[in-house]
Image (cartoon, rainbow, N blue to C red):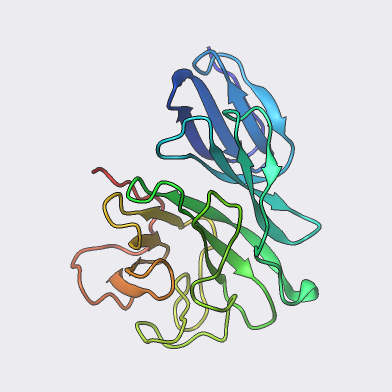
Length: 236
């Protein structure tokens, strides 16, 4: 028996305290099943990108959803296992130029090495001249407050693998593939280490302040990492 939900699916996550509870994000909303996926109910009606549970507190859930009128993706937090949701945007990203802004989604990363840290990687445009990369936002208090470790949203971009912020999502000519090739995860042993997969594999060792291309385009460490990365999984 099959059960259909309209839209393009983005993420599934099981509730750690009850494997019969499953959340599903798609471009039409957030959906929930409490019977192992047999039946689904709609929770939120807006494009939703990613969803993650707090590493140690199973009642806390983070959701990244699109706000089409604000032209940005926003971080929502639930403190009751996903039943109710609150916007957490103190210090959060706002587009620099609304007439040139574009929200293409984002990804959430959490780490058991520092359970209250939340990372969100945003793609899209904040202003004219941006090419798919907005940047990483970081919270150290479960989303109550946010900073941008790199100090800027989008461009101007420096050259890849330099000290100035560069475009993690695109080639030097600005070509990128948006959400189609995109994921982010954090190390479970080093809370400052992040990996972002796009047309290349990039690594940050300072909590998103800077990146190094380690595979595919401009890669300087790993061999045989193909471009166009759609998923990253951290095991241990």
